[in-house]
Image 1 (spheres, rainbow, N blue to C red):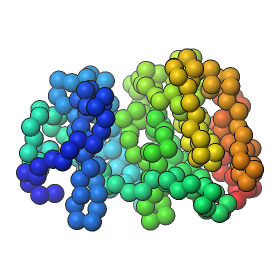
Image 2: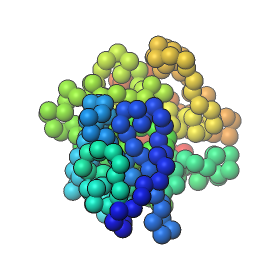
Image 3: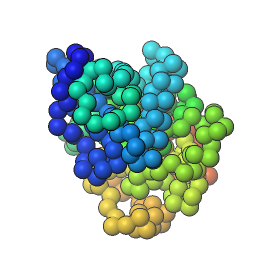
Image 4: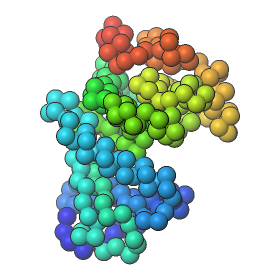
Length: 270
């Protein structure tokens, strides 16, 4: 990164910008990167989440091994030393490599073996994260990325190290996206590895059906996840219904409790 570069047009939504978030897509050579900044004296929750993500990147980077990677190439640096800043931002910025989305291809264009591999890749990276003692807390389809046939996760603003006792209370208070929320979260239960698994199940369901779940309000989302959701896949993908059903069980006692269990079921299919 050269010094004193001019920032491009802000990429993130106006709503997000109102809370002090600034996200830019920047090209360096042939590679694209994401630059994430947060204004000082802005929304407290947004500031807290931003700092949490920086901490998670640093902590996971120290834990990662070559064979159990979670993070894409990234850098945490002082933005004032690299860019012309017109706003007062927190003096740490996050710079993350931009690579393709794991689930960007429609499944109808893929063989069952290729579909199975995408599913396994998503399990691999989430399993690595869980093995390091972290739950992601905000699993979405766009947070899974792929590079050189390996999968990675991005956006750790809601991630929690469950081994740190001080974090246990924050697990219950962290926000989540209603589209991907497990039923127990609507009843004020804390996030867990199982709520990550449920969210991944929703990612798979929407990808395999090529249909986004829809609801008009938080209450409607609660009704959908707690009572209404049924796993029905197109005929070609019926073989995945059993594993999806186990990932999307409404009661945690009946849902898969870890990634290994899902892989065991999936291994019988693909």
